[in-house]
Amino acid sequence: MRICSTEILGQSVSGVGTCHWMPEFNVVFDMGICPDEAQSIRTVLITHGHVDHMAGIIKHAFTRNMMGMKPSKFIVPPHLVEPIHAMFALWEPLQHGGFKCDVVPLAPGDEIALGKGVSVVSFKTDHTVPSQGYALYRTKRKLKPEFADLPGKEIGRLRMEEGIEVTDEVKTLEVVYTGDTRISALDTVEFIREARILITEATFLTGDHPPEFADARGHTHIYQLAERSELLARVEALVLTHFSARYYIKDLPEAWKALPASLRDKTFPLLGGLKN
Figure 1 (cartoon, rainbow, N blue to C red):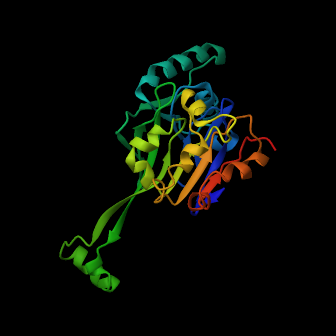
Figure 2: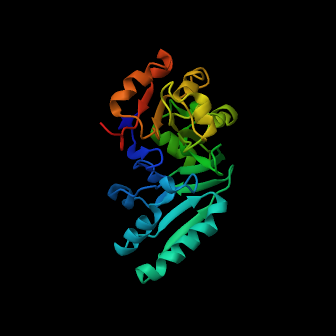
Figure 3: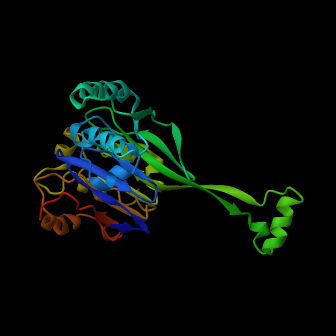
């Protein structure tokens, strides 16, 4: 789907497999499965170590090695670095060869540059195992207001001949991806609410499994998001994913009625993987 002029692709069903990718930023979020389209993107941001979010990294690394592409770069919570290396070591004798890949730890609060003015910051989330989400920032240079009315040649002269800095560096929060989390992440990590696009989970959608059921399993209920519509007022688009396998696409319109109109109008489901 295309939201706020940004393409978001992928599949996600709770407990089955999650993988989303954004070509504009050249990143993949999680890799419980490894669709062909995601293999062309080198950088994969892993939120936590559950099988439905990480099992596809073996195929990703192997395919990129086989096709002569740059080795996969997996950006992960620090505690997953050793287990991932151990997992690849187990596969090496089965594959009769090593896997070339980079495994990069990124602790909550740390930032790493991804290139072309894009950087990623990790933040702690609240799941049944240690987990983290990711915020994508874009940095651009913008002409200072005092030079806005000058012709281009004069701006160039000021910059080249007089050494005047005519631009400011502007950093914007473009996308936040939470991965699996209880609603507490939204309550405690304030910058999540400032994202242009917020991609978060809504594993549970109906009263059959209330918010308390979601909390106990480390997940979020759509009712909890509905209660926080004011907190989400500055988010331009809310993208919901990771629905339970118990739901069908036909169930979503009824579930969306739980959202107040102000939130419903800017909330979109990622349908990849859901049954008709």
